[in-house]
Amino acid sequence: MIRFVDVHKSYRVDGRDIPALQPFSLEIADGEVFGIIGLSGAGKSTLIRLINLLERPSGGSIFINDVEMTALAEPALRAQRRKIGMIFQHFNLLASQTVADNVAFPMRLAGERDPAVLRARVDELLARVGLTAHANKYPSQLSGGQKQRVGIARALANRPSILLCDEATSALDPQTTASVLDLLAEINRELKLTIVLITHEMDVVRRVCDRVAVLDAGVIVERGAVADVFLHPQHATTKRFVNEALPEEAASELAPFAQVPGRILRLSFRGDTTLTPALGRVARETGIDFNILAGRIDRIKDLPYGQLTLAMQGAGVDTALVALREAGIEIEELSR
Amino acid sequence: MNMLQTLFPNIDDWGEIGHACIDTLLMLGGSLLLTILIGLPLGVLLYLTGKGQLRPMPKLYAVTSLLVNILRSVPFIILMIVLMPVTYFLVGTKLGIRGAIPPLVIGAAPFFARLVETALREVQQGVIEASQAMGASLWQIVRHVLLPEARGGLFAGVTVTAIALVGYTAMGGAIGSGGLGDLAYRYGYLSYKSDYMLVTVALLIVLVQLLQMIGDRIVTRYKRS
Image: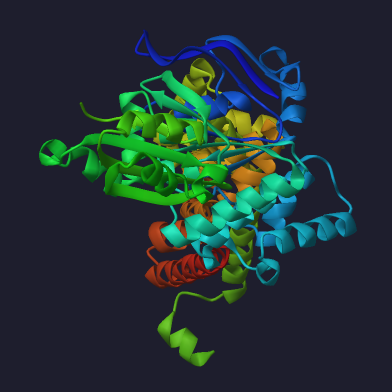
């Protein structure tokens, strides 16, 4: 478990303290994929670097599995860092070393010398990330997605319990992003690895994260299960991120529903409710009429969800809403 | 042989030129080796203690930097003369190859150290951060990240330094260090035997060309990015 207790961080610039992160506490559970989303300058890269103490907090404590990281001396800190893998936006591979040597690098740093051990582990890691054929190439000969796969193999070399992803897909095209995210999800599932990732794309959060914290100007403005935050964003910044991920939804929010007759409602389905014909049944039973204005059905990580914006008419609307809520559908009233 | 005599009437002992060549190469080799041995750690120190680097130490950096700048701003010929007592103390003579090496090294090491500092600054900050995140110690970062990643720039620095040293050894000739510069100065300048001057200059040009070619070849080989 990663635990931040009353942590804050400010930078000293020209004798003045510039706050980067306002005091916050946060817990990240073992085995979860935790996303931190924010615009650039919101403090998310500072936050992720606090975990392995690449940045030292100005106050507060950071614990990893009950080891107080902030209290460790340099050698003990280095030993802890070996158990935390990290991947980067710009990959940060050693240009002078082959793919295999890059992957072996953290093991060599940790004192592993036996070439047979190193080779076996490198082969295993390269097989996991699908780069077996590229072992003897140099990073400059690889594509961006391949470089990030080398980064992931390298980060896993010392069998860490935590993987930190610093904008790991921000420099990649959408298809490569999807395949790298799939790989991260697979690693999380199979190795029971805790993953903390920072991003400015809600889509990344939606695809792989279990929980998310939204960071705005150094403050965590919203946090919770991705489905909750995604379907019912509260803070303006969160809404903006969600709307970016759902452009058609954003358009419908702005659409002139004033002339549409009836009550404008947003229905959210998650998990099993997505798969039941509740809306049709309730409409039949209560005699209401509905008009679908916007909607989508997709997945949040492994959870199917649907969201429909409806205009509902008829005498039985209130009864219908009660029945829909009973069927497990979340309803928000957008107008009237 | 006859043709050589017609072209260079004043040169009666080609063996002397051969010896001078060997002396120049010995001075160059010896001083280059020592320059690297001293300049490389000095350059690493400058890099590490610089502002915003891995071990920022403003005072140490300022002092080292000033010392390097002073040594670099003194013209080499003056430096040689000023250093004579030091040279005598270090190697027991002010003359010959042995007498030439201390001033050559003291003149070239600060120059090389700056080139090392510049080459190391070219290493991407992200790569250093990644190795810190992997739990690398400062020594491991220097040994396994900074030096290998900067090796293209480092070899380029060695090449430039070697060529500068060729020039310095020739200047050393003026105060009795031997080598091609000595020949050019004694025969070519003091005795007006311009053919000596021509031959030695030609040989120096060949030497510099060779160094540059070898250097370029190594740099190209190790440049990957």
